[in-house]
Length: 142
View 1 (cartoon, rainbow, N blue to C red):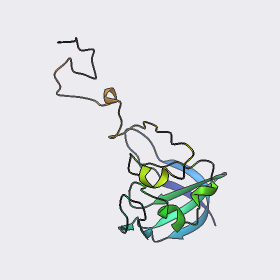
View 2: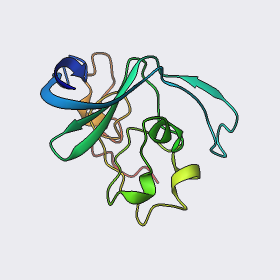
View 3: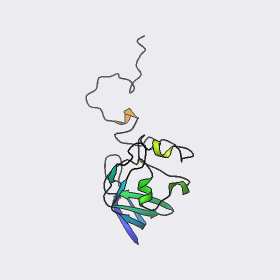
View 4: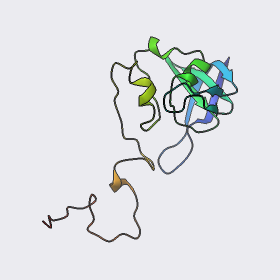
């Protein structure tokens, strides 16, 4: 099925705009599965209506409910064996490591914009005493 996906791949915010893509829908699911990772083994997850889309030569999984990826179950639900891919990208902070460390050749961590960024200078502070570390160079008081 070829479809035009709009306002689905991301949400509008002051950090980004949704992507509009032409995608081939490879699978549709109810988004329900059970975690297998050491982090949340046995936990029932409901991502809501979910889809595996093919955008060019990239497979993308989108869901109607936001959640971090803790293990490979969301991929398996959509017919993806992550061990067959050269590159797998996740939006997750740290919790994915328990499940993916043993199957990944390498894990690269990136700092994307948003509330979970490590770049504290990217926030618009309104009530903050300056100077303050790590935003400013603070003299050594030792």
